[in-house]
Amino acid sequence: MLHFTSPALSPRAIPPLPARTFSAMSETISLADSTPDHVAGTWYSVPDLRLRDHQFTVPLDYTIDRNASPKISVYAREVVSVGKEEQPLPYLLYLQGGPGFECPRPTEASGWIHKTCEEFRVILMDQRGTGLSTPLTPSSMSQLDSAKEISEYLTYFRADNIVNDAEFIRVRLVPEAGPWTILGQSYGGFCSVTYLSFAPQGLKQVLLTGGIPPVGNGSTADAVYRACYPQVIHQNEKYYKRFPQDVEIIREVVKHLAESEGGGVPLPSGGFLTPRGLQTLGLSGLGSSSGFERLHYMFERAWDPVIVPGSRKQISYHFLKAFENWLDFDTNPLYILLHEAIYCQGDSSLWSAHRIRTEDDGKFDAIRAVKEGRPVFFTGEMVFPWMLEEVHALRKFKEAAHLLAEKNDWPPLYDIAVLNNNKVPVAAAVYYEDMYVNFKLAMETASQIAGIRLWITNEYMHSGLRDGGGQVLDHLLGMLNGRKPLF
Image (cartoon, rainbow, N blue to C red; front, side, top):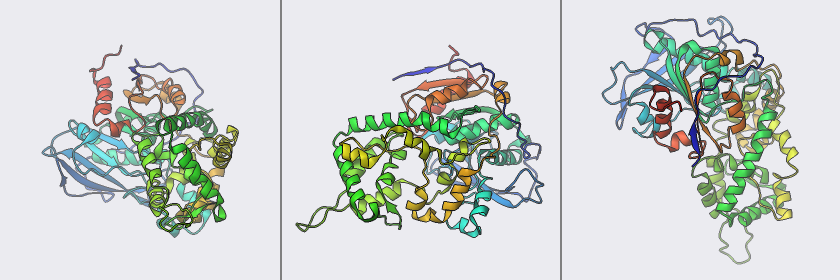
C-alpha cells in the first residue's frame, strides 16, 4: 500500500478572497450560566458510553440582529466513556460528511468514536437542516410558500453558517469558552477549512479525513467536476475488473429500462427509474469500502424469475426497493439542493456536473454504451437537474433547485490569506484514490494551509475514518502530538 507522511507545508501566495464577517464569534459565556438558548438533557447510556443531548436555539441569519432573525434549533450529542461524565476532558467537535446528512447515532463504544472517547469529550453536532437540527425534509419544507422562498431559505445552510452554529455552541459548552479540537470527515472537512478561515480563535487543532476542499479563485464547480470525472471512470474500470460478469447484467438492465414505456419503470415510492438514474448507484457503490461488493450483490437480484413460461422479463421489486434504500435523496434533500453550492464563491454552478458530463464524448451515455457493446459507467458524487423529476419526493423543489443553481452572488467560504498564515495545528488524511475529493485539488489546497501535515495513503478509501476503526484518527493525533516524527 502507498502511504507516506509529509512535513508541514508552506503556502504559496494567492490573492485572498474578500473577508467574511462571522458574528457568532465574539461572545464569551460561562458554562455555568443558565441561558434560554441552550437546553441540556440528562445523561443516558449505550454500551460503554454515556450520552447527553443539547439543544440550542440559534439565529437563522447571523448577519442581522439576533432578535430580528428567525430562529432555528441545532442539536448536539455529547459522548464520553462510562465514568468520565464529570472529568475535565478536552472537547472534540465532529463535523459529518454531506452536505445534508446528520451525525452518526452511537450504539456502542466502537470504531473512531471509541478511540476518540479515550481522551476527548465528543460533540456530535447535527448540521443545521439535518437530523434533529430543524431538519429540512420534503414535508417540512412544504411549509414554505414558493420556490423563491425555499431557495432564499436554503442559502443559510452552507458551511459558513454551520461554522457560526459551531461557534455559538462552543462558547456555551466549553468551560471558559476555550478552543476545541474539530474532526471533519469529507464535507465536514470542507466546513473545517471554513472554520480555519474565519474563526481560528475557536480551534485548538484540526483533523481532516478525506475532506480538503478546493479553495482557490479558479476552484469552481466546473473545475471540480472536470477533475473528478476521470477518477470516476477509473473506479468503474476497477469495478468491472473485479466483477466482469456484471458488464452484461447491467447492460441488460439498461436496455430493459430504455425499452420500457416512458424510458423507465416505476419505483415503489412513486419515482421513476431510468438508465441515467440507475447510473447514480455509483455514488455509494464505487467510492467506499465494500461498495463494489454491495453493488455486485444488488445486481444478482436484478431480475424476477420467470415462473410462467412466456412471461415478460421484469426487474424485481427487491432490486427496485434496494435502489431506493441505497440512495437518501428523498430523506436528505439538502444533498441534491445544495451539493453544487458548496463549491460556489461569487459564481453560479448552473448544474455544473450535468454540463461537464457532456464533455466526455459519450463515456457516461448508458444507452450508447449498450448499443456499442461497452460497459455502462456509473456516475459518482454528482447531482443532475433531472433528479428533481425522477425522485418523487423532490419534484416540488425543481424550481427552487434551478434558482439555487443560477444564484451567482454566493459569499466566500474560505480566506486564503488567513490560511496562508494559519497557526492552528492541522493534520489531514488524504486518500490517494478518493473518488469524492480529488487528490490533485486537495494537494493544491494543502499548499495554502500553513503548517498542515499530510498523511497520504491508498490503504483506505474515502470511508477510511469509519472503516479503519480508530487507526486513522490515532495516526492523525500522533502527527500532532509528536508520536509521528516530522521526517
